[in-house]
Amino acid sequence: MAGEMMRILDGPFGIADVTTENILCGFDNSHIQHNLERIRQTSSEEILSLAQKYLDPKDMVTVVVGDID
Image (tube, rainbow, N blue to C red):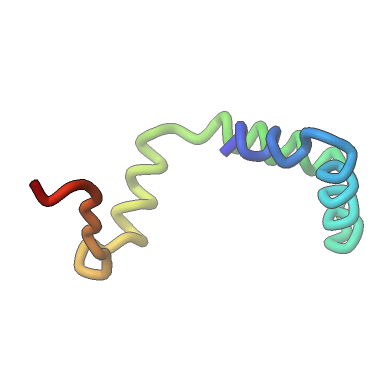
């Protein structure tokens, strides 16, 4: 997630988009750093717990890609 945030911010148009969104939501650009810190502090155990809480395997679809042969 942190890498995706950095990719979005790579270049003037991405920075402008994120800055505009922050302004519209009432945030300043320090909000970006705050989010990066929150992402980096999230443990794998927390992610697993959230996945178990919100993702139900019965609601998922299995997709297999490749040659039948």
